[in-house]
Length: 570
Image 1: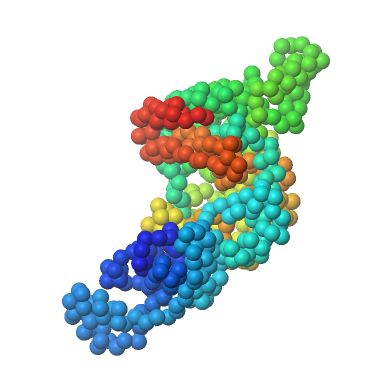
Image 2 (image 1 turned 135 degrees about the vertical axis):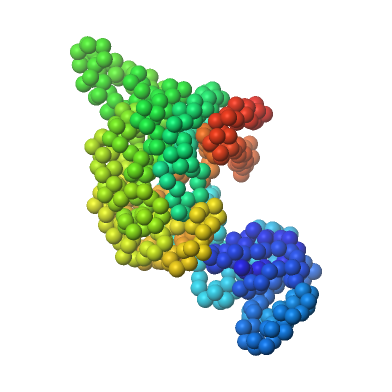
């Protein structure tokens, strides 16, 4: 435990996040309360807001471990109040500092507070952080906004260096990702378009590090159709309320969507294509992208449905393509097929038949020992077989996820995983740094895993970057999480033209995402074009997480959304 005492409740979240970034394995308590009410801690930090003198003072106290055993025994015999007093006497100031601030300017004060605290923590902890004082999950928002304001790259680099103390490498990464994101999002109409997320909250097993809404498939295998019935109600409502908007992106995630049977997957894809009018007569998704539509034309010409000759079929298909362009601006359709123990050739055939454009097959690691440890009930060979099945089905945009910092993995294990992935040659690679979430078994049962190393290093990060370059991939989106191994980041790499727009939209919060399913979170973005700053307001609508409750209360979930959209112009 690390404790932080404030003389007034202010900037608690910012202080907590920064201290936690330096000490991810420790609990951190930040509160305005008397010293004697704090529990024992590794060290105690006092933050004093001196408004009269426009100062913020910091004092680091550490416990004096040189006290004799006799003195400790005496202390144990004292009263509770005396115990606290003795504890305080045994503490000594290890470090202190202060910074002059203008409390009237809250944003500037926050940055100056974090800068000073960061400098002191680097001295006390004996290390720096790659992202400096930045602790938020969306570091690319800063350079993106500055680029939109017309700032030069040099101005952006200077600002991020001076304000957030970030390393040159991370500044360059965030800037390059921001530039790529802006380029890709130039195709998106933020105000008139939207994206759709559909959640399938089932998995073959729960991974050690996972905190997502997910339920063991075995308990719901015979009730999956009940879930789809409820989901169809919500999808139908969404299509109705969004009929005046343009659907840009569809993402089916989880959980593991491919826990659905081939027949159930066909039902789900058919209902989405039908309700949102984004499929042709054969149920295949129609994209705004001309290349995909040209493929559709060729297919229809080669397989005329009306028995006419190729020329007539081609003319008919061309007319349908032109009609489709007017009806839809669908840019992408992604289905996660992450668990190799959940896929079959028939499921991949269904995805291909519906013209799903992008899938994910996520090994996380290609080391069998680690797979067993984290609860992935499949083998390395299963991963390779799943990938081969997808290719055989004709799926040509495959993403693969991997995680750095998995228990017990170091340079050699990561190198092996990267080489195995490189040999398969996916079109995109998402590199995650392990984040130990509060709800994960790895955190809940962490006492069982104290001997396992959880680490990430600059050299490991560099290996992943090189592998992406070897596969002709560029970074196109990035985000961070709390308690990440090495305080690094998650980066998505992709071959040019095969990036996932949805991944950018969910991070940058520039477009509405309507989410359906248990545990799904709808994010509605309202743009104030009348404001010279083009301000944005974001409202969230949460579905219940429990699957049984979702099925039983689906009408309530829909009514909640109906009320929201009835009260807000969308």
